[in-house]
Length: 262
Image (cartoon, rainbow, N blue to C red):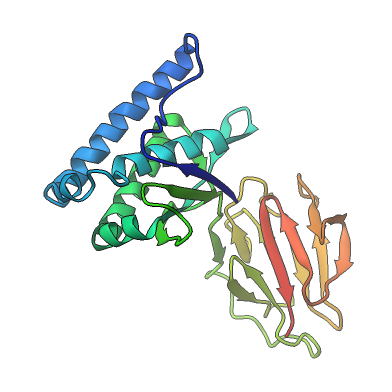
């Protein structure tokens, strides 16, 4: 997870001294055009309320600019034709700014998410999952200062097309995988994990292979790598096949998965 601090007067579109490159100039032009459209849409939605509510405090346009900068700064080239950028953002405001913004928070978050999606398309960024923007409060921040936290958070789907599983083998207990605080019970004798649509547990992560790994239930619970491109790791160690124990942390691509039995 990454965070940046911003404050009024900071120009998110500024560059280092000297003449900017053509690519940088084009990116800045796209940013400005998209920010103008964002501000106009938001102003229409709330009938100019932001212009009245925010004269000396944080402006919504500053938040939009910060999210664009965050995407540019945190984007990662994973292949010649694929650059992945963050898709999950948490904006934390000072108490005074949060109270004045809270009445519009839902509208603003939706508009910011739409702006992020549009900017990703313009910059040809790939996103690991659906765009999410949350707006919260941090009592440690002074008025006019805000913080942005971001991460590339993949969508995880259980395959509904799979047939109903038989009862788990004796001794399997309540085995489950926990991803981003969501539990996925292990009820099949074999659970395949990967990015492919035929996986039992599908992870939309560019670093995960289409058929990445599988978990086998028996007297012991085994994790087996299926020849994945980036490997399968348990507690930081790459494995081919290993017995899982409660609390083990698996990593497939950029996705952390905790194995639980209790």
